[in-house]
Image: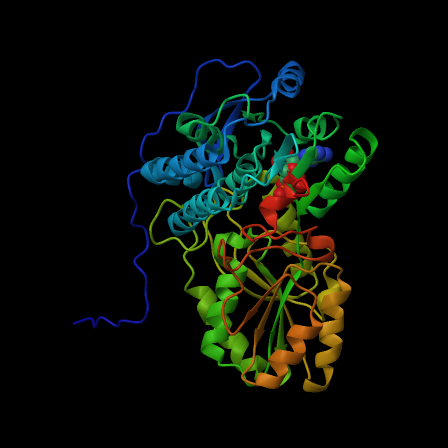
Length: 465
Ligand code: ADP
């Protein structure tokens, strides 16, 4: 008789039946197909890309939200209710369009709802709208970040021109419809799907009174110069951008905890979070053991269709992302630097979770936005050098630390430049209201999203009493 050995094994292959959500397949002008990154043959729907004429009309007709502050708050809360009431549909879109695992989709909806309720509560009659805001959002949190930017701008009484990422227009379309149905006037919120050219047009106009952007550091820099050339002097840009995020694990860390947190930080959301752990520094004395444990934990990851409840790691967003990350891994392989890699499905844009050996974070010249962890070791005498190297990247988004030495927590937290620091826990997450998210240096301009200073940035200063 064969024995059943219970060893953390996960049942693989359980699939929910994909709900047959229908998105417009009718002939749209400028229609472009939206594809499922787990199954590129699966066309999720069509999006109508904004034309030059539509962009011009949107700029002409955008009208700051005139309703009083109590009405605005009521409508944003009604939108939050509608998001929750339509959770199943929003999960299905997030999963098929953005490749989100179901747990990630649940967390994302919660964050979007929290943003709506938090900014609704923060709106006051003291705030004066600045006017028209362009909000440009990325594909990796296509509901939460999209909604957060818009909710803050609307709560302060502005008009919004929203430009979702080209990969994820369907979730933005549905969210916009729910906001309109809840009572946000169409003149105060207009959706303009398209790529970087649409984003550029919406940041190169003197009628724009502010831009909220989340995406790559390179794009933020382009937007800054476009705005400098075209917008009124002093027009604010709120940018949240990338990171080269590190974690230090010293020899006093609890290895089980550290490994669990490394796995979550590096591989959840297939590494497609700006907060994700990219570079792990392990103290030499414990490196052999910790890396053995890390390999074991990587072997337990289920990579596959995000619609399966057992999936831990889904696909990366599209072919361009796939190719860029695969080339990076191939280069490391040609240099004999692969520490570990697990097997993945051969169709769809699945990147094998991979650990790569490097000498230090200075070897990383760019943010690899996928399930790839870089690992370096350090001697106890090198701790200051490690911190200096982390700071020298110029980014400053997240930083993780595992140690049981209290004094060390204190000194390291003081020295490291990072907007969000995670001690003896996973390097993930923010809580709207109490633990806002945002970086320093090349990682963003601040203020932190979901914090007390974010919404006020969308308002002109209140008139002196
Ligand atoms: P990612 O690497 O996450 O795709 P990007 O910075 O390229 O980051 O994209 C983030 C958002 O910025 C997307 O909505 C994209 O269409 C938009 N975008 C890209 N280029 C420009 C640009 N030159 N001006 C304004 N928006 C842009």
